Length: 403
View 1 (cartoon, one colour):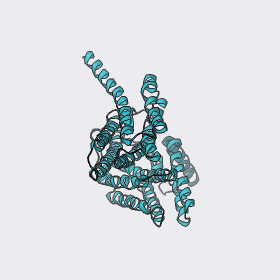
View 2 (spheres, helix red, strand yellow):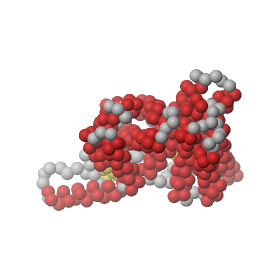
View 3 (cartoon, helix red, strand yellow):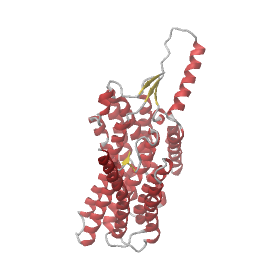
């Protein structure tokens, strides 16, 4: 069994300076369109079923994207560009099908998803095991999607949900080392059965991700999602009269997105606020990134809708779109910090209050305008940023004294 900790064809020195390649950047363009399409599911007055459908489609889209993101990360210069382009096209078909998901486009969405996932499981060479993210090579969660080809209506969506749930369980529960051990045991049995025959037996090769490059790729995804928020606010504001309310709301939306950018990327890791590199295995970082960016994408949809409402009392669904997404965003950070044994002072003084404030706003903000709600959320994000900024200053000050 061999271990490979760097992408093939690259020296250790080149890995340290590695950045996203042109094909990876081009591949991520599908995310720009994807987030915009998914945001349409939450326009108007979304119901709980709309939220559920959004979550389901987002998880499917993110998982398919992540499979090829991990492939590009591990393969490095040897990435197969045709495979990346085919996967990109498949993701584009999935997103184009979102608008008609309740009608005749659901089957196209499912077929494209299955095709991308099956392709993702076949881009690896025989005997290679992706230790850091086993789901990249596993197709168990695809089975309910295949069954859904012959099912219609809500039953099809429930099958999709079952497939996504299987993938989430694999991400959180199945470790790469366990997969490697199981594969080695199976290979040993084959060797014992075949004996000393002339036919060669493949050697297992453990593949590890480039964690620095992966963090950059996940961070670029966060920037794309935040950028979609800026686009939606600009688009909504361009069609309205620019009175003081709209100006205040637009400024608040921009400051809110900028604050989340700093928390996720300047003071966080893999898009998760306060998370430190190496605190968790790569597969957990990926799962946290999935949920965090999903929450940001919901907020993005809410900001676009909020700009259209202006000074009006915010509908209940829109209020929870804004407040619930920020609560989930900070809740993920608090949960990760709890398991990573972060400073208790941060947990009690910043993480928990920042999670609780949006929930309280969702409960009592029935008569508040979207503008006021957004500025309360801005203050919440600023409070978390104040802690992170103070920690950076303290670290720099301590480093200066050591000199």
